[in-house]
Length: 577
Image 1: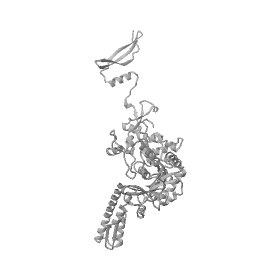
Image 2: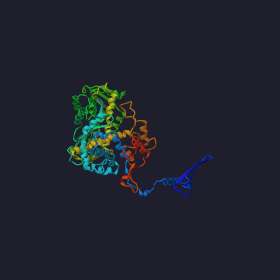
Image 3: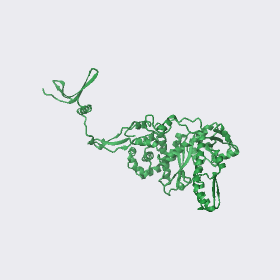
Image 4: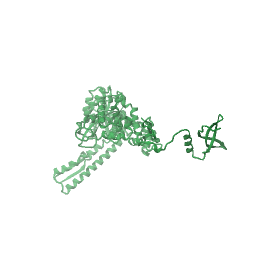
């Protein structure tokens, strides 16, 4: 009888002999004969490599195999850093802060904030750069041009007050400490109405600039920002911030922490008229000297303690917390010595010219000396005698010693009663300003690059700075989540001595010393960690002889470090965020 239906397959048998397992792979054909299924062995495949046997088995089972050359693979786009940033933004519910309903403008704003973190650039450059990653695809912004971005900035600015109010509701509580400080950034061009010459914190003297005041919570998390004209004095910005905290944010009580240049005596007198506003600030050096001269501050108080409270009639109803930090004293002494040497070095050539009669005349000598004498702010420590044909410069030891006596001494002033805030907590509260300084460093450094400001329309300048604040809001939370991978201290111990330098945990010190994590991988900065994630790519794959609808995305396999970084954000390397 003829054999019918001859499906061929690979059959594997195993037998145990003397503790070993022997496998036999046979090529067989099944057929039915006389109502029974029988098998015919066509060959022994046991001598073939296991992967070839598996391939043959799958092919005989019906799988179709094609050459890799037949697949279409689009160039891979950086994807991991996009997953991280967009994932954190969605985790924070940032889009809901902007607008409850989905809109094109909301997507554009999300894209600009993410781009500011991933690769900060001008708005025109952003439309070019974000197509070089998966960012535009994730938010469907491939066709967006700079005009759309400018319109979205206007849309965002119109919602700034509402967004800041929502952030304040999340992070500011009545009676809590609120940090406020001011910084500046130089401008490109001369057309912006906000751009003026003022005190430059960028070290760009004589350039047009803007100023912006940042409000954060006690942890340094940004809540609100306001742009001021570049020639605005620091104290002049305080009133609007207090009004924002009290009226817009609805805080019944607030303790404002700001530096000595912001909360001047005149400004504090105005705050007395506003109910529910406490404050912590510091005295300037001349005010401290006045306390010493009046006897209110006895320097012998530091013989046994580095922190104490004193009273003075010139500060009625206030608490004065005096502190002395030996490390700060040493640093100030060193700096004064270096500045004196630098000034004397600049004066030496002038003295030589006078001695050689190449420079004469009291007025001419005085003009030459005047150009350098106060460049380093130590003129008060030098005694200068100028005659028609002579120049003598010597140090004023009395002035130097008087200033040295106050090295390392600072005095904090506060309106908060002791039952609400002890002396040590006043000191710790003032030191929190370092967190807002860190925010400004991120604004201006390679992280966010708020400067140079390439806009000139006032509303666009304000929107640009607000975008940078929102980007830092995301960065702040990313750094908290990524603390185990960064140089950041995960759990800094609270210093027993509030006056002394901040303490770092043993783990943070080890990371700084070895620049390695416990598993041997490198410790990163925020920017280099994003760069590490950038190498995790996503590619578009089109199967051979298939319609375009059959294309799919393929994400490269993350490295253990990339997987860990994403896991800390509760994310995985999926094709879509």
